[in-house]
Image 1 (cartoon, rainbow, N blue to C red):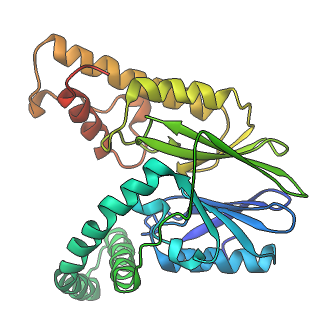
Image 2 (cartoon, rainbow, N blue to C red):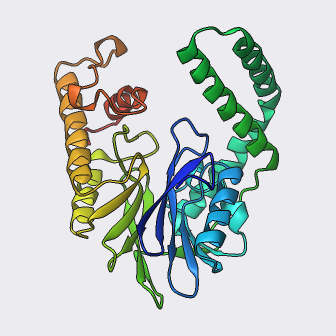
Length: 315
């Protein structure tokens, strides 16, 4: 079901419950979704692009046809909240920590990115010129995808406005709709200092945001805590959801939580081995284990190892 956007593929998970799984290579970057609560709609995450968020809003109008009352931001990273401006009439929900991080970090990030716009324009023109003469079909497809990515980023930066959450919650918030209950649950010190998940108990569905990535290397580098993250994944298991929508990657099931815990345990074991040998050199960084060789964003693996090695204590 992709008639709504070039940026994402909609998957119907249950009556009135949809996952918006980002297309590979799209500048929208992170997954999103929406839920019919009965008289109103809840949106989970708003992508990295206002353009993608606009498409999501249109999908809600056509498939549900009810007002969007709530938006949940999983955490502070741009690929989960830079589309908030399309939902400025909704109640935008996050934790206090997440809201503070958005307010503190995004204005400066966007200022620096906008300063780079002239260079981005040059890069776009150069890539467009190369496409005209490229003969290799595989290379040409990759270049066309990269060109679309850069053009989407350019457009986003021109129109982007940071819209902060208007409601902060503590450990949880439960919304009782006429069609279903939605539980918004806070988890601290996993992927970031604070992440929200959306659990739909009647449907057995949970939107995890970046607390879970499926067939994608999860990132620790923005204040992640590998040891505590493993504990949080065990807490997610106890929700007993049969359908899990990750922040990155395809829709999955409980087996994805086991894989994520194993990945983090493997990172900790590899890092402990390096420290035991008193090595911290990039040259002796371990290769990506075979079990994760086909996962997307392979470079994040090495970043995770460096992050753990630079931590004062082994997490």
